[in-house]
Amino acid sequence: MLPCISVIICTHNPRHDYLDKVLEALRVQTLSSELWELLLIDNASEKPINLEINLDWHPQARHIREEELGLTPARLRGIKEARAELLVFVDDDNVLDSEYLEVTLQISKSWSMLGVWGGQTPPKFDAPPPDWTKPYWYMLAIYQFDLDRWSNVLYAGTNPCGAGMCVRKIVAKKYADLVCNDPKRMNMDRKGKSLVSCGDTDLAFTACDLNLGMGQFASLKLTHLIPTERLQESYLLRLAQANGYSSVILRSFRDDTLSFSKQSWRGKLIEYYYTQRMEQRERRFYQAKKRGEMSAIQDLSNS
Image (cartoon, rainbow, N blue to C red; front, side, top):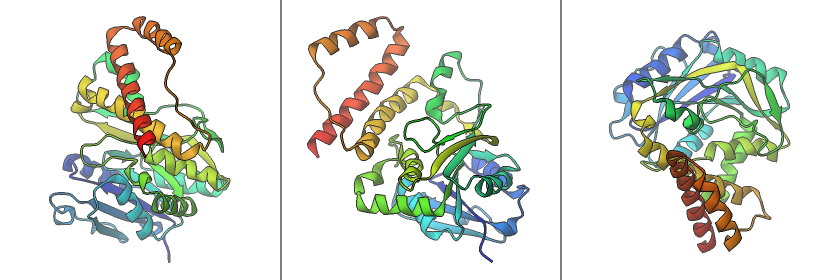
């Protein structure tokens, strides 16, 4: 019998204390293990994960090695190997609530108009975070909300983040085809030390290409483990710049009418006065995002 859900964990040189928690949360899922499979995608880790991680506790678990470095190649490998019609992408720092898979299956049956959906991702920090970091938590895929929402409109804010994203196989296969036909999409996510992102957004938006919707459900919840180094200003500034870059590249895939022109002297003047009203840290983050956007525009102009 084919499984109802394929759980796909993509990991590269993982923190084993984190990955152990991720797997333990999967081991205690209320949904019977007979109804879902587990694919652990080792994305070119320096030390093969199958030598250290035992998956014998699950009757439908597989170790899969993907040698091409990058989150996108790892996801594509998971899509190719998955046997179920519903995929759940779990990062190696995502601790699912015990009912996550059961609720996911219920949503898939009740909301047939949706192609992708996700839930809340409250954080658990290794150490108490500085207060100044809170406005930037959204960049760390930390989402908390009370009301369910959905739409089939791009940029409506209903697309789930990659953490715990639930994707119908038809959407995942369409996305894989898009990547194969446009190699630039292969670089739209983490690769080594690069913080480029938006591959998960591109995947979510693919649901709309198929006239399906995107949703967010408060009843779906996982805990996002956050290491201390991700709360350093230097890291968050790099992340802001990468996000600025990624958002422009994503728009270039999705908007045929998109054009980039040089900023007028009036626009530069307005922006200058706008930034001068910011406090210093806020200005640094704004400028990092703008550097990323300008870098993306330059790359698109040269391509």
